[in-house]
Length: 382
Image (cartoon, one colour):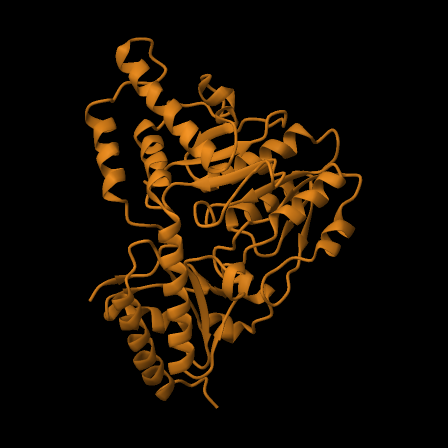
């Protein structure tokens, strides 16, 4: 059996999405900036897509700006605000558990003379509103806090955070790449000023994302060229990607999310009942992303488990950041209090709307067998 449980990394493109993309590539292929019929037809598709995505988060279509993905959206939000409001202040607040698209952007801005505060989190990955309020100063121009963490699935209280930011007259951005379509988002009710989303996490294509920018918020563009995307993001629009992104938003349902939650809990319960010393990282229930399971297995290396699972046809990811020269534990797992050796023994399982009960049960059985075998030869065990 082949089981794909790395949907937090990327998802299978839905057939409905592939069909509309093919149509845009081969039939409706005009440049949306062109004035002839081919261009106008392509532009009409972008207008519809913008309306679809805006409706999903209760935004105005004019507040949606298409980008190449979540990383660009995050960079545009953080750098764009930093440079637009640097006369007002040069202090940014974020957390220790952000996606690298945020954390590395903030590190870059620190080298450019900005000050960044990285908020710590509790053992389940939640920030403290009190710590956030105490961190805000007269020099603070932006707070950026991830909506649902990409590693441990923690869903932050957007409304409480945004209300605090509004009270302090500070702009609020959230990376909603993992949560978009899985958690209800209302940018008006939640008082969100900027929000990043991406297509390939929700069965859309890679290379497409969007940034919501509330009307009236100033952002300095990263790219300069044509007047596309309201002069916020120059460059010929990725029309097939945009239309495919919108189709992916259209087809996901509450039923899909409910099923992912049920299978998520089945996987958590199954592993914890069949494997001793298996600790769930992050919260349980509704405060956890519908498709996310992150578990630390004592006395084993996550990489070894990943390869053994792959040998059984199960695709997952580890709680470590690998490169050709180094192996360092996940900053997110360290931030919630895990020891480095436990962080190294962590596996992330991420489900999709296509995941089945049979696949989950097969994964549970495979995990049990592999952990038992690895622990027999583990030098880490007492």
